[in-house]
Image (tube, rainbow, N blue to C red; front, side, top):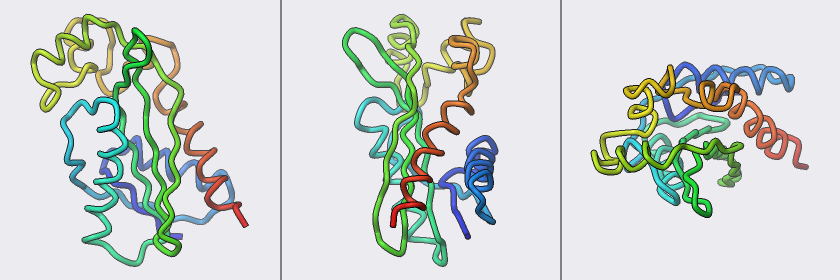
Length: 170
């Protein structure tokens, strides 16, 4: 099975490979640089839009794929809190169906979100701001510092549920 990931991020490629392989699939997983069309820090609906834009960008340039997986992290206003979640979209080029899932969320402190907003979400992520302040040790995985569970675990969880839905639906 030939699977494209809409990013060259090794973490995302590795998660996709691991999940499909753990479910018994022989896969070739390749990451591609794609354009999300949204800022560095997606907010609310822009997160899903960014994931979908990446799929459209890839589809316009690469053929012969069995699946396209797009993973976009963003912050969502939920009640009075900002919650970071990954949106995962799997696109099946044969059926033209799109499957979506959202990861477990991690609450980001309001103050860091506000600093990132002031700098501009187009160029600044909340993870960057938190890392600069020493609140988290890794701007790409603030989940580990905040909640004690790596972002990889959240991605594996939502991706496993989606892959099961996509591949075992008969």
